[in-house]
Amino acid sequence: MLISIESQLNVLIYSIIAGMITGVLFDIYRIIRGIRNPKVILTFFSDIIFWILSAFVIFIFLLYTNYAFMEIYIFLYIALGIYIYLKLLSWFFTYINHKIIKTLGIIIRILKNNITYPFELFSYYFKNTRK
Image (tube, rainbow, N blue to C red; front, side, top):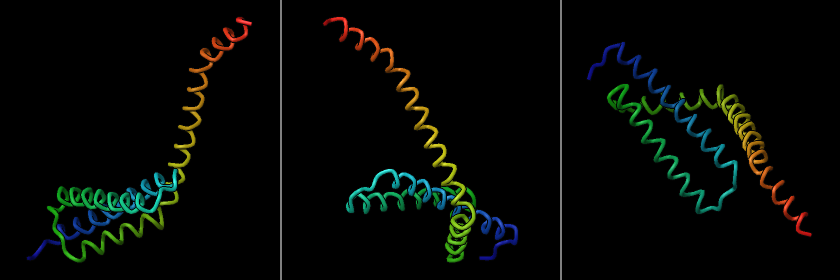
């Protein structure tokens, strides 16, 4: 089947973008896995779920962008997109996500302390006045 140059260029660009999306999903998965160190069985099943979810997301993306036209070079371009993302952008994405997670942890801790402080003060007052 002959494809126009414009369609081939779209397939190339969208396949590389699909690879970068896979890289982002992989970084999110690495960040989630970095929080806790699960057991081997749980790791196996979470890896399977990650790859099924990634395949589903990439298939839907390619379905909307190039009608899920799949040839061997599409997989090579996806691999190229993953490689480009992991070499150029992954460190920045994980750095930003770690900063966001750290900041959210601080905000949640401050909110928890501010919300529970009146109750702690109230309970402290009643503990000391009953003596």
